[in-house]
Length: 278
Image (cartoon, rainbow, N blue to C red; front, side, top):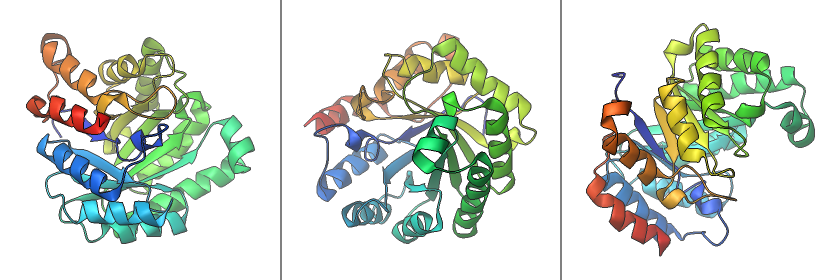
């Protein structure tokens, strides 16, 4: 991949749907997916196949219809979830991706997972290995990555890249990051991890402090990330996610500074913004 290309990963249909009152029917999801494809979004995260039969069917339908964009399904780091994702996506018309995640911050490991760091490391490796056996395109996210112990995070990420993860996504799950620090954090991970050049680095920021777009762009400029996860209208749980249209227009308007390209056809921004807000 050329160093001046930025991958736009849209999660309106997955994370965006988690904002209050934003649940969508299968038909609405299909309409949005079709519009995202027209807009030339690189990756469309279509849903969380294991979360419900409705989500499974929606992901399956989108994968069976979209040809130009890669379709991703989000799966927790266990075989049951990942198998559900594979079943929903394997009939895809175009490229597809398994996106698997597990929490790596001390708080989440203790309170939510009730697992030791060693168990989390092992689970992450096994899950990526299982996903990779069915799909060449595997993305891994350490949930609450921005608040995780950097030494432990490096161990986990190095291990999952070794197992074949092709994209490493660092989520700022609770919207805690600030731009300069977050950019340096991504840079230090990429510097410290021996095999970091084997994966595309990605960020998934939340807007709790109003800095999701700024954090994402700092991760790209300072940290060398080359994928941004975002949503139409910045839709998402709590204060929302990184706004796709703000990222794309910032890169386009200030090309003199960012020197990065996206494939996005910006003439589709207004129509899809209206469609989603309806």
